[in-house]
Image (cartoon, rainbow, N blue to C red; front, top):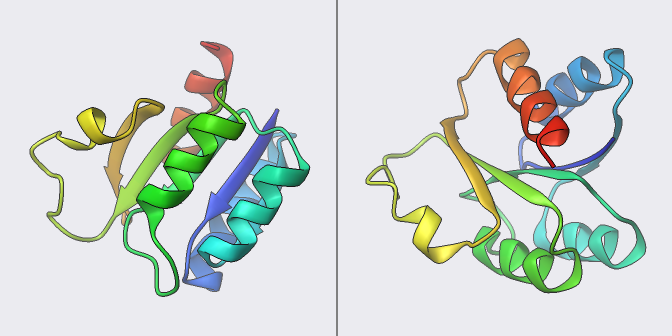
Length: 120
């Protein structure tokens, strides 16, 4: 399974990446919209772990591009804000499959990635 992590905090992104790689996932880390779009142009991904609030770029633009370019890829949105806490993210992003807090333990996030990758 291939996973794209889009996270502005490189330390947090690498923590998630290492946890997923230990389970055999092939993981690419993008720190901004430009690199995420490039990765989506070049490779197939099964799951995208996407921080809703990026320092550079727009997460919804990435999710929109992914739904066009890689429609099979499911998106797990993560955030450290209450933005979209009403669940409306699922109306804005047809490929959204989950919405969790950035502070979710890495092993729980990996379990979600496994679950949604297997459910494809």
